[in-house]
Image (cartoon, rainbow, N blue to C red; front, top):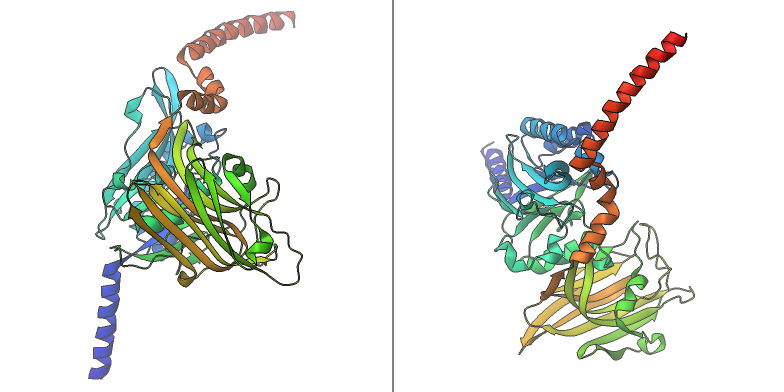
Length: 467
């Protein structure tokens, strides 16, 4: 009996120790702007002992409809506060709010953090219209502390690309929500998040997933996993490969920006080296492939190099240096289902990409596949400084269904904002809305409505007299 008691005590102590080292994070990948849906997920998360739950923006919050979604802001905030207090967990939500500024109704993107008491403890706000003069509606990214001894950074999707790692001041745990659209396919948050977390040695919790989802569990539409509170350089991070299951991506449309060379399929069977240069910036490649199965080969890859600026969306232009192997088709969709096998008939025994990037850049591996999961031994990413450059080598072995692989290097010194592009992006979506809700226009409609009511009254009397 005493032995059994000792075993039980030992077991409980071990579990308490584990609990003190980890926290449970949950994410919801899709939700409608219905307060009842938020409450349902919060109750579900509480039953699963989730410490912090992250919601995405409402499904219907496209540029065309976000103004109607913002009308529910107060109701949703009240609902979230009450549900969070009752469930006793932290909740992060991305909502749209309409505010009045300089006689114009403006839509604001807001990340809100609710603590276990239902209070808002952190808020990160940005106007949808980036050219607004209402600086009071915008805040810097949020930072908040929790009662489970973790300090989080509060981000929106574009922050992963637009902010340098130094801006986060050593934070290692982040929650992120709030969508951003970009013309650069591999820099969308769903493709870039795992690479960002891998390089920055950080926990990243977002509706796109959780950085370390090796032991991810699912209950209904809610995913959750346990993460270590303290993230160290010696910790093993998941290989940052994006599996394009049930996703669509057209990399070929992005290729005109690059200097490219077709991959030599015949030479690659024995392994060969190639160099591709964009002006003075050069990328080195080693490719070794093999045929898979009896399928006809439908492989069309290019080796690509780029140095310069790219348009990232909403007026933002960013500095990029990149070396990569891409599938080459502007029409073919590279997507898959979970049971899909290699449709190309080509596997890479080894692919190595080497680039010498400007010293001070932030360098990230990019790996896109429609196939299987990767093991750590299949992937390597190393760098070393050499004068004014940093040589980065990324390598992948024994992989099928490769869609894109390489290095993207962010040169923040070349970033700039184009007011013309910003205005164009904004006007395409909001000119009509802003015009209708401008104070002068509203006053005009009020005037017309008053006169119209008088006319209706007079006509009604006339009709009654005729009867």
